[in-house]
Amino acid sequence: MINFKSLIPNFQSPKAVLLILALILGIGACAGTEGPQKNKLAEDLKTAQKSNSTLTLNQVTLEQANEKGEMFWKVKSKNAIYSKDQKTVNVQKPVGKLFQDGKEIYDIQGETGQVFQEGNQVFLKGNIVAKDLKNGVVLRGNELEWRPKEDILVVRNNLTGDNKQVAASAKEARVFTRARRMELFGSVVANIKDPIVQLRTEHLVWFLDGQKVNSDKPTQIDRYKDKTVTDSGFADQIDVDLKTKIATLTKNAQLIPSDPPLQIESSLMSWNFPAQNVVSPGPVKVFHRVEKVTMTGDTGRGDLGKKVFYLTGNVVGIGEKRQAQLNTDRVTWYLTNQTFDAEGNVVYRQLNPVFNLTGPRAAGQLKDQTVVVKGDGGGGQVVTEIVPDEYKETLGQ
Image (cartoon, rainbow, N blue to C red; front, side):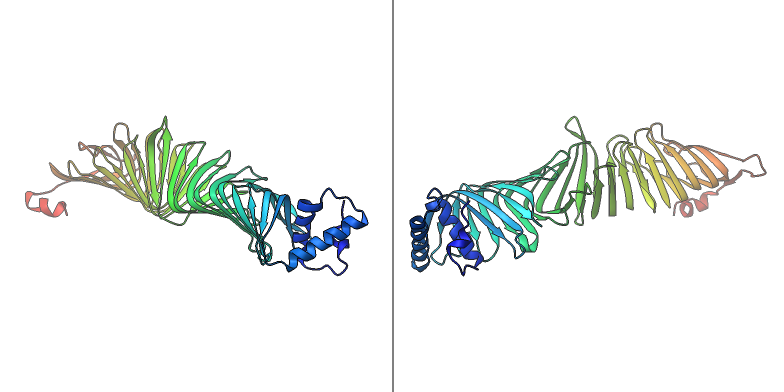
């Protein structure tokens, strides 16, 4: 191997390192180490440095390292054209590797590019392919920018990203290589592969090692079966754990399953895809879109597979068609046949005919006013109150 530093005793400049390396590879790589050849190489270098014209080299390898000698990048090019000030190199058909802390982290390639020697920056254009060597994420686009001192890899313009868990598209991706975090910006569409779930938002963060994605912008999340949307969710913030396959919807959260036909609203809810359940630890509202029945409670849990919803604390159920209302501590709502079981401080009111029922327990249907209020066998009694006609309007308020 030729030790190109030995050719010039007082050699120090990193820029000169790159230039000499390129000259050796492009002009004298096959020249050997004889004295006359060394002199000729030194003369060519001196001429190139003094010249105010560009310099073109074929089949070159460009490298850049930091002060510790740790590699930043290594790029092979079909040909390289040095600028007049020799601060940038234009490359054709570049193929190379990116390094972080001396370790290879990405394979890259493109159609054309620029290498900024003093700025420690690589910029590629056209048919970009960048592969994460640790977790297999492949980024494609039309522009790539590597800024190793800032710990940022940027791929933009018709961006797509893909690995075994997620396939995504956006206007731009920024990869923070040490933090193992990728941020996607602009018209983001992320398709989770198992189960098939799609997120659409303007900003998505993908934690590559943690196997999580989240968005702090309004996001729609759809679950698919046989290419058909079965459930849709909306929230101002969404977090998805790719390992547990649970999505957490925060702030103005809403989930709309197609079967059962519900609209579930809360400030916070978790949606377990495999178990087909939804849990809200805070106030929740559940509306049956077909039967026009609404249930609210301090907390709620729904088994969408079995079509059962459980609400606890200050539960209020309202049947819009018959203007019936149920108040209780706990309720189990069977969504298939629209029946319910209520327990604790039950109060049932209806307008037609007008009466109130109170008791410890109740069962029935709000949609057609078939409700039975029961005692508890321990002294808890059922009280029926017939409301005169003059109080009908007050009852409905």
